[in-house]
Image (cartoon, rainbow over the protein chains, first blue to last red):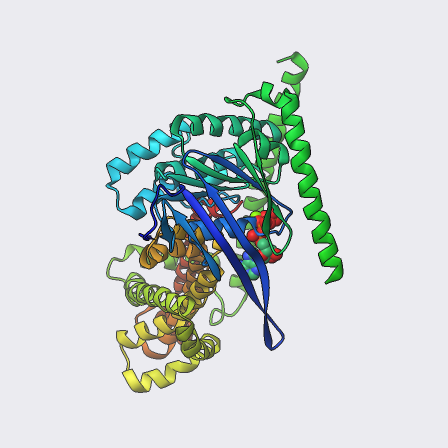
Length: 276
Length: 268
Ligand SMILES: Nc1ncnc2c1ncn2[C@@H]1O[C@H](COP(=O)(O)OP(=O)(O)OP(=O)(O)O)[C@@H](O)[C@H]1O
Ligand SMILES: [Mg+2]
């Protein structure tokens, strides 16, 4: 759901403006507010691949949910193509860390799910789903159930489901964190190929600095609670990203820089927690 | 495959075959022993209180062969209140569970009564209902409903309140309407709880309908039990017991099969 606003001078694909988010928790007979995001602003252009890293608990997933429209911020706003986001919409799709598959549905029916909700006719949605299942390399597994698949395969089902909705922006929350090292590299490669073929706008949360730098045009580093953006690092590495890119000295430099900033954030959070 | 592997494989196959045969032998031998003890005890004891297994089997067989016999009619009569009563109880139970699981107001209003009914022995209501509804099928159907509805609704409610955000969040992210969320996510996610409630409810319904028939029926399975035991027809009395045991085992087997085939997917 998006509402048009007045200013529309070629706005960025995704604009996050001064987001404030507080969670409320009941303590004994009272309620206390825990600020989680404090003035987060971010601008992403069409076709950009932006990684987000930050210490655990700094509010990365919360930010992603706000961008998707799953939760509302206390302050600030999210705009897609200059239109204010007031809830989930088909211009955005999420790939969840926990896969978010339905165990009672086969791979095919899981991938069809979003289309089914939109009321796409059965034949058409099956066609789209089959295409995307093949796209993520799961041809032959259409009739399997999630419990019969490995973590990496489940993640690809979640990805195929997001792709089936043909969103303009894909929001990914640590999508590869629960798969083994080899699978992770394979999935990274597939995602980059898909990205360069489709030129979708991607916001990619990860715990891995290496992955953040390797995948993105830009790495956004968040600081500890209440979460805010401490630095944005432009990744001036050549495309396509291949394993040779990892061997470039520039890759090492950027990674070291990102690590320095992240460490500062983690240290600050430790101090904050010690003070509290 | 090497020769050593092959020998080991053959040995393993033989071992598995032997354990299988052993298991069957144990079951068969103990069952024969059990029948023998029953037969001897039956012949030695007063025929007013016990019957040898050969008599029981003969009576059972004769009543099964008789198409207008009491036993089959009794079975039909019992099923004709058990099945509709149970279907109504399941549908209403799920609806009640959804109401209580989805709406806080519904929960606050209904929970005290459901808790009271859930924990009241159903048979205690039979004399009262007899007074209100009178003897007949409606009474028995109402009793079946009362017996089965609360386990179904309580389980459904607990299941719905337990549905993980990991199921609802993706659907909401894909713009599911409230009705789609309920039909396509919450209800399927609650299915294992509903099956557990149905299992519990069926057991209670079966017990309660038999007890109700003790009171009000001469022809249902419970009625036959009551009549044959009060006229000391021991061999005849065992027939409905065998049928009830078979029904119980069949229901349990069916639901266990359901758990193995469908509910297996829910784990992991
Ligand atoms: N629904 C909620 N209610 C209350 N507090 C919440 C809720 N969701 C998140 N939080 C809190 O907000 C903070 C940020 O959570 P969030 O999941 O966004 O962090 P994160 O950066 O994604 O962490 P991680 O790297 O571990 O995934 C945490 O302290 C968390 O406990
Ligand atoms: Mg997170």
